[in-house]
Image (cartoon, rainbow, N blue to C red; front, top):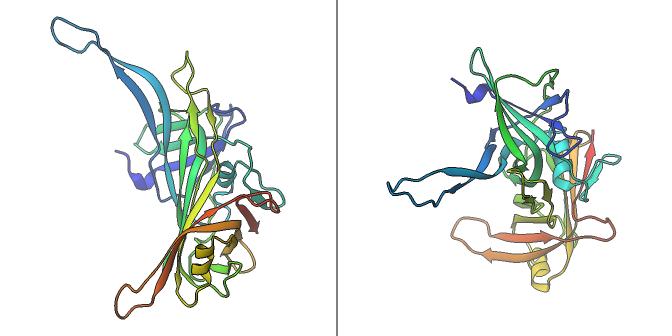
Length: 305
């Protein structure tokens, strides 16, 4: 019987969308949970039978999708970030772009003499969430859209596996730094989260159950923050509809860190209320990131090793 604590998740980059390399060099993934599964579309036959029975159930479409949840650590998800951003690391800087990157994801279930392998070809990161809160580690989730799923009882011939790194998990206390919002002096947050999506859609085609390709929609970044209400600066940015920026660092002070830079954001909601006695007043704001011509990006991530 398979045990979740003995399940391996690994990936290999594809040269051709939906095609696993002939001698795949898999990399193991650090993760906390996953929900990768095939999606089979079925149509029930409407044939009329004198005995009132259903004649058949026909497969007419196939894809796969699911989440991979994680605790953020340096260097563990750089390839997935490229897929999410449709870009490539260039001198340790990654900006959102239009370069598609797909993977074959593989789950290995330890079941004794014969292991079980579930593979998902043409896997592209559709979206990612990143959550930071006081007293917590930085967590997130990648959501994949895949061409299809398959099952096997043996590893791919000549495949190899490289173990994941052992870098420390990043926390939102001592590993959160360099927070800056133009127009706000010394902002102090209690929570911050980002939601990033590519709005992917699959291209169905006659003659194939699986989609021929994936179409990338608009790259959208939204987020929420909760701040101590110490002055009017954040609230007035919302009231005036003024664009600003958001920058923060996750990781070590001088090494093994990521700087997330949203060069242009606008707040689309803000709430400041006295919720009750014996507690600080907090400002809760939602924001949307916009394209910035100077940085030629909506989101820029810089890594320092």
